[in-house]
Length: 332
Image (cartoon, rainbow, N blue to C red; front, side, top):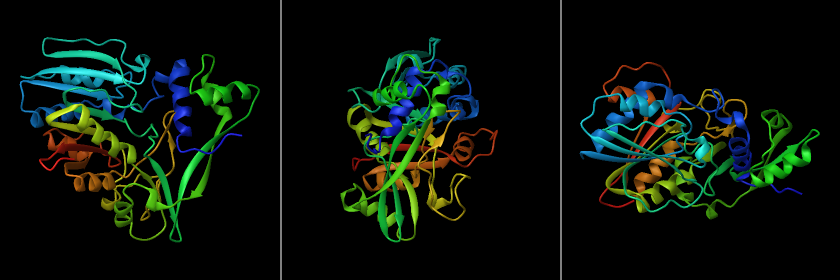
């Protein structure tokens, strides 16, 4: 019998992205960050400001199939030369047409963020929606009820005539004969398990950040681990890690609309498009922990991020955040 697991949803998402031909079509993937030029240009301006070099080396995690972000940046006047490496967990998910110019050099590579990062030397690691649809080993859905802590774990229930084939595909995270309609027969079940928070890394910071009351949170342990690893293995001195996502900053009241007002309650997962699952994490807590580890962290809404770049804000949105992380002399 299938056991409940923290990472079960990874197999679900992996199966969708690697097996369904329509996975990368319009409407199936979140594209907010790549389709609005003002956001793309704000990323470029921020990078050029933070990296005072004639040549900027960027590695993008989880690029996806859209090249529109880099088209917008490439079409702007720049005095710098850009070397950009676009990556994703499979080459099939990367843009089909990538055009370099005299100022912009592009390469595409396979890079699975669930595996250890390779040794590299870049000035910027950039990602948008890079952490919300991946359940890292360090990620935890935590709930506190009446002073007791619980951890959320998941498993699948499958119905229909193709049940056996779908279950085998879920176990492997891939299949050659799966269709979008097959996902209508897959249900994700959740169970709460009592947990000893003393066994959770950053226990003290979690309890300090949420001192009282019943809560439901998605703890961004994977983000914290990958930031550390990126600075250890890939980011050159003076470089930065930039991530943009639909996220929460609960201490500033930035809570997605589908949560109850005034309460800290993050759903285990939500649906992007018709099938893919994603989670909303508390980046306010991540910022606090990273700063205690010796990083300098800027966390702003997309609106604030665009405004700081000197552009007009083309939309109103508060549930998408941008985090910029830089190592200080204290380390990280």
